[in-house]
Amino acid sequence: MENISKTIQIQVYTRYLDQQSDPGKKRFVFAYSIEITNNGTESVKLLNRHWHITDDNNKVEEVVGEGVIGQQPEIEPGKSFNYTSGAVIETEFGTMHGSYEMETANGEKFQTPIPAFLLSLPHTVH
Image (cartoon, rainbow, N blue to C red; front, side, top):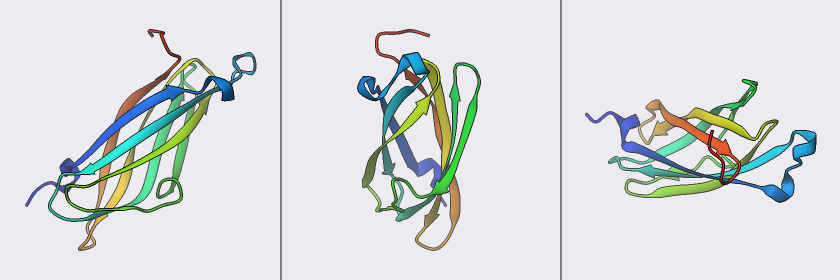
């Protein structure tokens, strides 16, 4: 039997939201778009999310909740689900990582890791 968590592919794209940010008040706003692709042979449902958001001062915010953007999407084999959300941190740089709790059509629950990704202002290197 295939390792179901390894059949889920996560791709992340981030961007800095200049107009919603206020560097003078230590408010840096980022959007992140995520594509979740089911490369497996059975449908999966995204039940819960668990994020660790860390700014450049090592301040960590943990976010745990049901679904994503108010949905618990079911992703058929060979299909993808895309969504965009946001994060607010107090520094110009930060990272996010976490996991999704998912469930197969036959009720098997599993964790899909979301690898760490960078939140940073454009044209900067850290």
